[in-house]
Amino acid sequence: MARSDRLFRLLQLMRQMPPPLTAERLAEAMEVSQRSLYRDIDSLRAAGAQIDGERGYGYRLVEDIALPPQTFTREEMEVIALGLSEVKAMRDPAMSVAADAVLSKVAATLPSGRDQQLLHAISRVYRPDRHIQSPAFLDVVREACWHEYALDIGYADAAGTISARTIYPLAIMYTDHTLTALAWCCLRNDYRMFRLDRLREARRGTQSFRPRRAAMLRDYIAKLDASAAREPAQI
Image 1 (cartoon, rainbow, N blue to C red):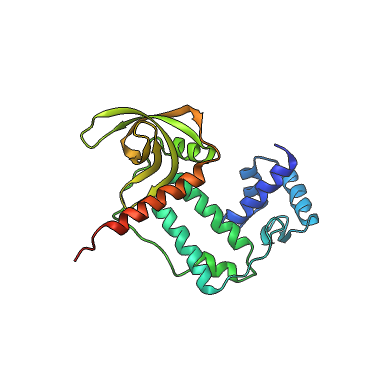
Image 2: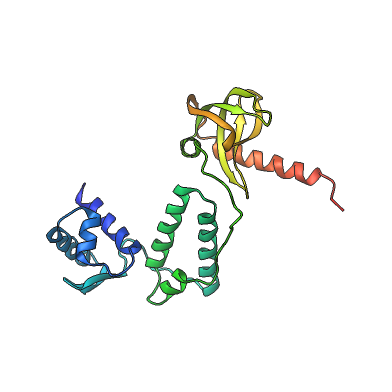
């Protein structure tokens, strides 16, 4: 691992790991010797990181050189905590890990004391009845959205009939009980929604739709909004 990458990883560990951050724990997590860890701590301090502590007692990252200071009101910090708590409640393993990383990075940019207000915010999401299981092809669909390439899928309808399709995945929509891909269906030549738990197969196709994803998604959302506006109000 390049030294710059190792120092960045050490910063991330110091943001995320609970105290006490002893040299032994950090060295074990970094898979380096304690001597190397001491050198890396000294390098981070020389680069401007404010790290409290001494060898043998543990460390605390006070000011993070990688992230500029941020100022949030108490309400804004509650919004951040609430949003990240909602992400963790979605039961998406990759997004849950990312939510923890975001929380630690934001906390690292706050002045002393304000970080604790964020980490111990009063706003939380609790959804004991949310039963979304991570679909088998969730990561495949997410990668296809990010990189804007087609997917060849096998899709089962409500009756269990499987059809082969090529889709352009535009976004993943989270609801209370399902994950759904908003996509362009090449078979129907139109926008469609595909429940990810009904995917029986998903592999990278030969087509790319870059850089059209953002425009196509805006178009699809506009069509959904227009369709919702045409529906008669329920009384």
